[in-house]
Amino acid sequence: MYDVIVVGGGHAGCEAAHICAQMNKKTLLITSNVNNIADMPCNPSIGGSAKGIIVREIDALGGLMGIVADKSHFQIKMLNNSKGPAVRALRAQADKSIYPKVMKEYLDATLNLDIIEGMVEDLIIENNTVKGVLLENRESYLSSSVILTTGTYLNANILIGSENTPNGPHGEKRSNFLSKKLEEIGFNIKRLKTGTPQRIKANSVDFSRLKEECGDDSYWTFSFDIEPQYQINNQQKCYLIYTNEKTHQIIKDNLDKSAMYGGYATGVGPRYCPSIEDKVVRFADKERHQLFLEPESIYYDEWYLQGFSTSMPRDVQEEMVHSLEGLENAVISKYAYAIEYDAIDPMQIKASLETKIIENLFTAGQINGTSGYEEAAGQGLIAGINACLKIDGKKPFILKRHEAYIGVLIDDLVTKGITDPYRMLTSRAEFRLLLRHDNADLRLTTKAYEVGAIIPSKYQKLKNKIKQINELTEYLKNNRLIINEQVKAFFAKNNLSLPNGNFNYLLLLKRPEITMDVISNFLDLSNYSKEVIEQVEIENKYEGYIKKEYAEKEKLNKLEEKQIPEDIDYSKVKNIASEARQKLELVRPVTIAQASRISGVNPVDISLLLVYLKKEYGKNE
Picture (cartoon, rainbow, N blue to C red):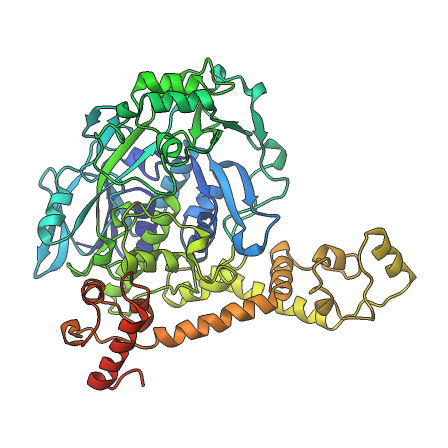
């Protein structure tokens, strides 16, 4: 008998299993192939715009993805480093052979965690409560809670042109019956699609004709707890290339052979990561599209052609690849394919990621309609924490939209649902300046400690960092820049506007042209880490904007505090629109704030709902 069973060993499953075991729950991870734990069937990268911040949040909450990425990448860079701190995010090229091994090592070393191979084909359910799982070989395992993290394996089909093969990623065995069982239980099943591009043999590419893309010349880590594990000068290069008129013509001439445009696909593909044929059709005015050639591992010579995902037949793929500059003689080691799979309607799950239909059954990752390793890992972590809290009879751990990108992600899923695979974007977050790369630990680590998700030493490290931030802030406030001949010469040499008076350094830092690097010429900052210095600079320089976002957050908090009773009968709320009534009944929002975010629920519906609550329950006065 286990406390928690996690089904699936992808990125969601790894985080869920690890955090449950770390929270002292006897945990079982069931995966169809232990060699595919933390596999990267698509892009061998971790992070990216918004996604990199999710990885930092995972680390701040006690998860593994950040530290495993730090120990397995061969190139890393900070995206949007020249822009404001709200949009900065790390992206690393992970070694596809090392990342899974490092993750497996962490899981193998985790106490309270067992890992077995097997294919889960049914759930053991009694009185609408999950009691365990049944494997394909009819073995059963009992537990207090089950977390489904099935990725793209549910009823999966591989599509290459008109070929339709019933397999999971890499030709792995798919789950044939579980999605049908979920549908019988009452879940709405959605058919989704994603894809992956070709892998190219490196020795067949003329790299001299491609533009180099190098890693940063600064050290970075996703994790708050380890030092950089790489040498700046030893980072692997990636390369930038573009499609051209010939590429586009080949695609246009063969559109009817594509699984998508030939009518062979039924699933809905990702809007923000479309296939190359979809790009050519949707953006017909574009003369070219950007592609990246990225190494998958330092141990073998397959390179990933990012941006060239397609479901064209193999012979057409050959023509397409050979039309690219530098790839005229390229050897394709693996052809691109699309993959269709089943997912559930995320509006049938709660913000805790427990399903509304079956008690103690949680879902995380692509089964909830998301795309991407990072989105999956974040959900797995939250599902794991909440499964443990549910067992202990404690209230769920819910991250609000102003607290984390993970909170935005889950709220979007359970409140708005999905029509295509969901991808996290910075534009989805209303409070981007609060949800920064640099402050993920300040936002989340205390919360994680309070629910028992992190070890005391990690929390103590955060407290030491906060102490240093406060000390540095006072240090800057209590010291002034004295205008003398030496200071005048420095400002003139660096083309800086000389202050009109002896300002304290904290006030001086508010000037756009003044940075902590400038201040370090006048004050000794050697006692403070790079992270502490960065935090003080951002919080001070953007103080006005941050205060404005906090004010907006407080308005939202007031709506979040207006609770909606679980037993409310929306049929009795007079005069609201029929669509609003249907959506409210489906989502069953917990607060007025959540109700206001539901698509199809308008401000007038919210006003009528508030009137009803005040009259019937005496609430929200």
